[in-house]
Every structure is written in C-alpha cells, then in structure tokens.
Length: 131
Image (cartoon, rainbow, N blue to C red):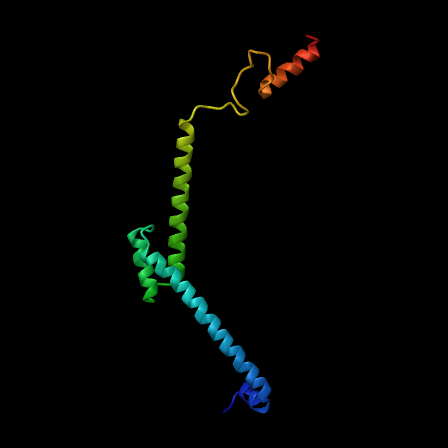
C-alpha cells in the first residue's frame, strides 16, 4: 500500500524532484551539524584543560554510550566553577593592593591645587563661606 505522499509525488515529477533535493539538503545539513558537534566533543576528549572525568565522559559520548547533554552540562559546570575561581583570585589580588580612595589619593591637597573630588568640594565650601 502506497502512502498519500508517494501517490502525490508519483503524480507530480517536479514536486518529487524538489522534495528529493530538500531531503538531500536536510541530510547534508544534519551530517555537517553532527560532524561539528563531534569535533567539539573530540576537542574536549583530548584537552588538557578539562579534568579526566570530563574527558572520559567525552569519550563515552563519542562511543554513543552517554548523551551529549550530559557532557554539555558537565563542561558548563566546570567552566562556571573555573571562572568563579578566577574571579575570587582576582579579588584576592585586588585586596592586596593599597586602597586608592576612589578618585585618587584621599585628603586635601596641601598646595592649594584642586586635584581630587575632595579638593573640589572643599573649594566650593570655601567659596560658599566667602573665604
């Protein structure tokens, strides 16, 4: 028994040719996407950046033993944790630096020149007081 689609395509050779082209294009796009995705998985599997459990999971994805979503989640979690650690390290390094006081050195300039926001505010206050 033929499907309605088969009957329709048999009756219209132009539609069949167009349909066949769309199927070929979709298959080519699917193969391309698969290869790109597996290329990413392969890079993770051999990368020294990721720990052994993630590289082993990537190998299992390549062997179709684990879903790609599991690897995606593991990589995202690892990357987020790594970035958080980098932020914490940067904060610790920043905490070791001497404080800047925001706009520059704190306190008023002793030579009368306006160099900081505090100098500016003090000058305005003096003008308001008529000094």
